[in-house]
Amino acid sequence: MDEEQTAAISSVLEQHEENVKVKAEDKKAAENGSKGRDEEGSHKSGPTAVASRANATSKATINSHKVFSVDPSLKVGIGIVNDIVGPRAGDKSQAQHTQQPPQHQQATTVNESGVGVAQCTRCKKDYAIYNGKVFKLCPHCRELQRLRSRRWQEKTKATSGSCRRCGTAIPQDQSKYVLCPPCRLNLRNTKAQRLEKGKCVHCSGENDSQTFKVCFRCRAKDRERRRQLELNNQCNRCSSKLSNEDMGRKVCLNCRNRNRNKKSSSAEKTTIMTSSQPGFDITNTNTSSLTHANTTSGTADNKTTSLHPQDHDIPTKQQVELVQQLEANMFAQQP
DNA sequence: TTCGTGGGTAAACGAGGGTT
DNA sequence: AACCCTCGTTTACCCACGAA
Image (cartoon, rainbow, N blue to C red; front, side):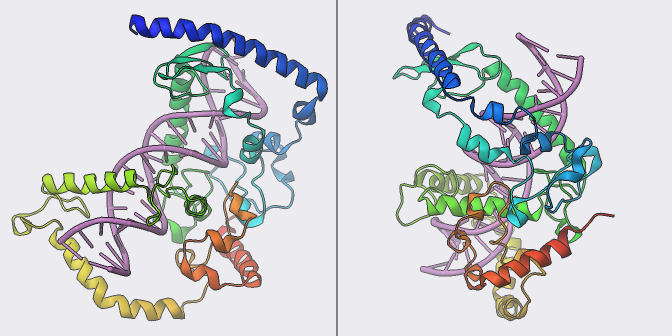
């Protein structure tokens, strides 16, 4: 840290301390006013408490929601998914989002040049901000958190057949994915929601384009990625090394052939698709009615958030049947 | 063949609540 | 107080597809 930064930090530190004082006073006032959610949840019977102890004794008492089977080694007791039958038990996320104090209420002071001080929400210590990016945790706590996340994710990864996000068992017929169908669906929905909000479906930032769903920056990045592949003599599709016969081309023989095969079989595919029954193959099925945990579109109009054109044609009653069918077919894995 | 797009994945962030 | 476990969410990147 150079002297300039030190000076800048010390100047904002004073301001920051004032902010902390004000915040503390506000908090006091709020506590006096109403004893809010802390008291509400103090008996630890809320959904959060249920989830955190899911692997303990109370696992049977999770309402009447569908419970996924979860690999015991992961000790993830609950895999209830909002998209199918309601909110995930212990789904804190929605609460988090509604209860989280807005960013500006955090005891944070940052000047125009992006230098400042903030208070770590975990260890409560003040930490320096250098580049304007404000985190809730100090670097130390973030590092610890990162390591924990890594451990957790590696553990999930090591457990074959379990979803890498939620730990629930992945149905046999979905074994080519590392995420369970609801989690994948959830991600699709996230993107659909971004689209709805006029945001870039890739980075969720502001979409500066009226024409495209992806912002200029993301498109430029993708262009650059392909350009780099070309410069490295790699196929700009599969990124494999271009052979001598492929020299001068951007796409390898394999990918070119695949393209040809696709075209020749496309007609056949269309017939299969139209004759297939909905509900049995989740990859080709309307699953937009099944939004994953904490997916706000679960309550919103799913038709508007769906990215799949065929999703629009399935009526509500059929959606309900679909859900039941999926539940029965895909997730009934309890021994 | 190009390039926008949909969708999958890894890594990181953040929070609640438990344990040491 | 410090650290850990767990899990939902966000961000960034990559790959494959398909329209033009």
